[in-house]
Length: 197
Image (cartoon, rainbow, N blue to C red; front, side, top):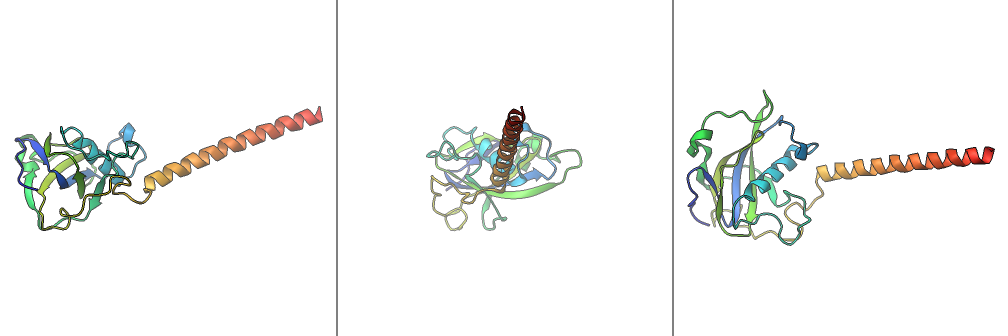
C-alpha cells in the first residue's frame, strides 16, 4: 500500500487491493463482444481488460486460465475512509463533461475493487464510449475493503454462477432441445413413410 507514482494522465494500479469509481453508461453503445451481457458483467470485464495494459500487473486469475474474464473484479458499495490517489480531473483531455453511452444515455457511478497479485503499475487513463474511470483510491491498511486477505486464486471472487452464465446455459439447453426435437420428428416422419410404403 502506498502513494501513487503514476505519470500524469495515467491511472495507478497498486499491488494488492485496488478501488476504482467508474462512470458506466446505463444505455451502452453496441459492442459485439459485450452483446447480451448485463451491465454488471460488462463493467467487470471492462475493468479487468483495462488492467491488462499495465506491465507487471496481474488481476486475471493466474491459476485458472479458463476463468471467465471479469470474475476477479467485485462491484461494491461506495467506500468511505480512503484517500484519493488520482481523479479524472487531473487528466486535462478528460476533465470536462463526457458523452458516455448512446446519445441520451444515463450514467451510473459504480465502485469496484480488484486484487493485483503482481507489481504496482499504471495504465493510460481508462475510458471508452461506455465507461470512464473517475477516481482511483489509495489502499489503506486500516480499511477493511483494502486490508482483506488475498482472494483464492481458484474460484475467484465471483463464487456464484452469474445471471449471464445462467442465461447462456439456458439458451444452449433450449437450442439443444430444439435441435434434438427436430431430429426426432425427422426420424419419426421418415420411419412412418418407410412403414407406409
